[in-house]
Image 1 (cartoon, rainbow, N blue to C red):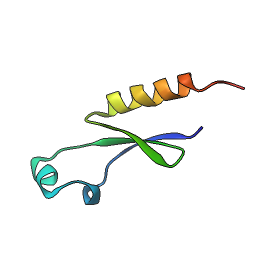
Image 2 (tube, one colour; image 1 turned 135 degrees about the vertical axis):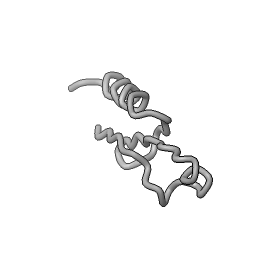
Image 3 (tube, rainbow, N blue to C red; image 1 turned 90 degrees about the vertical axis):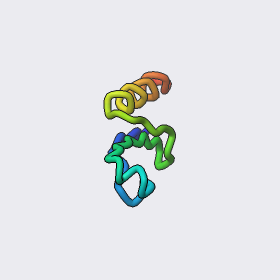
Amino acid sequence: MNVIVHERDNEHLSREARAMGVVVWDVIQNGELVGIFPSQDEANAYRQALEEAQPQG
């Protein structure tokens, strides 16, 4: 399983969000968006939960 956390780029934010300086963090699992979070800490916590829920082996 591949889980990635990254900051959403400005091209994927509305003009209003860009004007307000909103920062959004995306969580991508196996190439698909599975979560959108207002902070990097929340996004990383979700990533960790996904990785821990995945069966090992």
